[in-house]
Length: 278
Image (tube, rainbow, N blue to C red; front, side, top):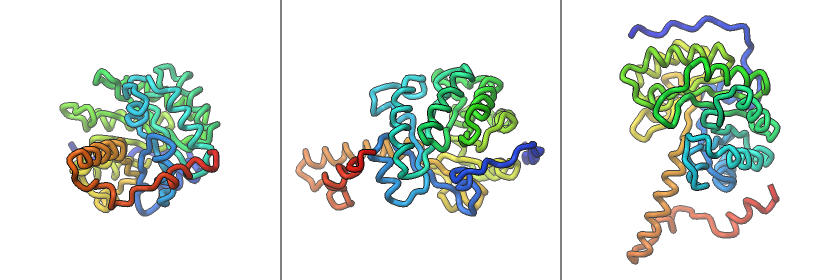
């Protein structure tokens, strides 16, 4: 496919909020994704200017399926606690908005904005492995921006995540539709080919978000390609599960616990994350 031609300008100024500004720096915004209050708090304490949530982590911690619109209340409860804490700017993964009704998605976005949330991640993938029709997803984006104009909408397309046979053309079509609908950023998880990333960055006038992969380009390489935001997704949650299992197995076998020498926080440190009542 030939390089993507630059998209024509639209009559809309870039969103002017502290969170949006993080997408316009020389280096990409590295967005770690939390699954509860404690994980968000410890990440904020390490100096991350913004923290996201991971829908997989939130769902798994609650014993619910991810991507099935089952965690609306858990997501809102966590967003209210984190958004009002003032510890950091917060972007919330809302799956597909928990509805295919644009008005319902917009109403949920207003609840999140009222809770102090700075941005949302809104995806077009469905649990059955198909994609929401582009027009439906674009209508959701438009409704959210009309109802909560200061909320940064990161419009995600799962064209690469679902491994379509030839995703490039469909990706271009969907990103253009989401941009016209008012998206503030565009997210293509599953895309890791440097040439394909560079092509998208060259043709977009909105920040491009890429999902970090341990087998894909490193953060400096993504920066050089023009990526504006790099999300860790469920990676931190999954590595936390792996650390818990490896520690338990080591103790059971009589081996030294691997976490003992890697800065494991003490009881009082973790308890203090909630000491201010936020």
